[in-house]
Length: 133
Ligand SMILES: Nc1ncnc2c1ncn2[C@@H]1O[C@H](COP(=O)(O)OP(=O)(O)OP(=O)(O)O)[C@@H](O)[C@H]1O
Ligand SMILES: [Mg+2]
Image (cartoon, helix red, strand yellow):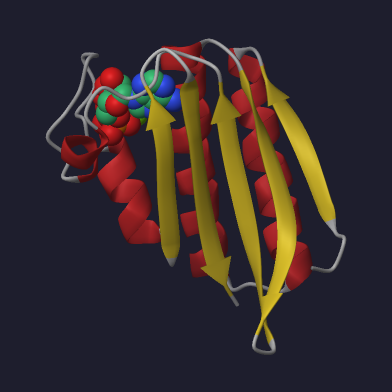
């Protein structure tokens, strides 16, 4: 760990933009290429929007990560909302409780190097995404 980290609280629509902006800034600061910066901003946008839509509020924590000499970024989205009823189906792009496409989570997984979903009914959801340089 490098100790470089931050947090954006997601309570309103405007906070989604705040999360996007902060993700863009840290990804650019790390020297990631424009394609990866765009992937990260898109993924962050989707997960922040899901918190806003389905949990109402939550947080995005990010930190610079190091492993085997590689540097990357991890973003953790945490809420205490209703939980994702069927996260396996959601990752297949086959589950939606809204009028959305149900493609947000599966698309996010495709964009990132790593994604983990930890969710429990009535308890909340934690989603961690990583992108390596
Ligand atoms: N943080 C969350 N808390 C509770 N449920 C969630 C959360 N994120 C996603 N979900 C549930 O998982 C479903 C699938 O999410 P996903 O982002 O893949 O699709 P969507 O939001 O329905 O549509 P799209 O993202 O394509 O507009 C959602 O419809 C919702 O029921
Ligand atoms: Mg979505």
